[in-house]
Length: 494
Image (cartoon, rainbow, N blue to C red):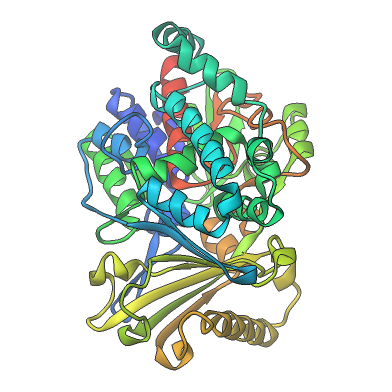
């Protein structure tokens, strides 16, 4: 049977686009099928009344200019693209219980000084903990991050740098909590480390792999947090341009309804009744959506084993605000996290995240205005079985409650609002095509580090998975890693 492409990618999220561009850069014919009108998925954007809002968070790793962990920079460069970025001097300003207020400065020593000033009796333990995270990062940054399932590549990497590989191997089964308790005793400081993990892994330190922690806790001071001019959506648009320049294709409005793998390839069925064929297919849908919705076959035992270990993370209640600029005092930081009670760290609408990207790129909003994007974890079950009117009422009430909490930081915020858009887990499920609007997997219990996270292969030789439900997990730099790994692996099979 004739093939429509050597490789097809289902979904134009960042992981899928990086995999596609890696293949196209190697001369492999690639077709990306995207159900929406623009690329990016949860790293996309939308526009209202002169504002350009990021769909997801604007705290971006991976745009550094040195080492090997700058995966977004490298992914764009592979297809002749680059973006102008703005460095963020503070990763996060924390506003936590008992008046615990800490800013994570881009400068490592400034951060250790500020955290040590709050916990002077733990100053030595703080340094030893974060310094060990640097050891993990240096191992990661010494090797080229590609597929862990392509054995010729692994042999080559080990031969090139055995010390870094062995250094990483010892941390594979460990979690951040293991490292933290090795050096730290203060209960409140350990809760702070929980929040340091939760803000990007959506689980506390005991359930966050040490290798992931080493990457995040160090890269924010190495490559830093850098915001792309024009918004986060520019990343996907640039990858799409580079893909097409290298001979790849993207079809928008192409909703995939079934994936039928066989010995020679995979048949892809679309909602319009069309059938396409490819030698290899990469699903950028979640593994739950891939095997529950797209592959009409019994669930493979390996996928069931993974589900026994991991569950979907919550989605988010997101409130996008266009506000008068004078409500934010001079010196306001771009990213904030607010929590009033440690017991509510993982609760429905407990922890509040805030991004103000116009502090880094004022052109995202009309003159004299700012974007305030606030979001908080929320489960789909909280929004189900509501009439249209009840759903709107609950959205309004939840948004008002969230804004009221932010007024602790910025009094008068509610009176400064000119534009307001509210998204719920139902919104995320609808527009992103993700089961329950989830933002990826979280371990059901205390995991054994990164051991157990699925890689890119599936039980079907011609079907692969990419994105945040594969190793190493959530975040743009993480899914870029997944895209590099998947692209390298699929290319090796072709």
